[in-house]
Image (cartoon, rainbow, N blue to C red; front, side):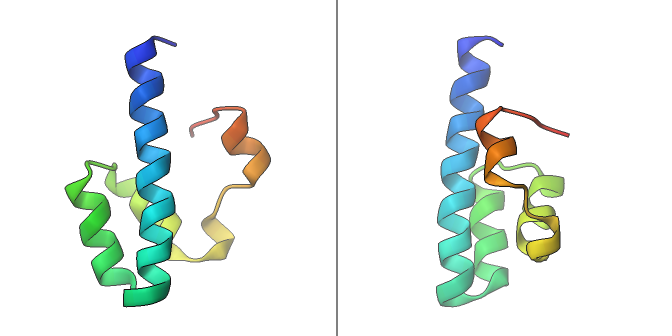
Length: 67
């Protein structure tokens, strides 16, 4: 994986973490807006904000898996 890809995925992970906080404090609509502003793919945003059954396990995130 190229360094630029790693940076993008790392920034995407940071945006997702922030969006989860936004969702808890302000709701899912502001969180979705935030993810869209940060350029997170819509499928990722929907999975993250769709509910816990769609969340990835922490172990998968560390291994860098993307489906």
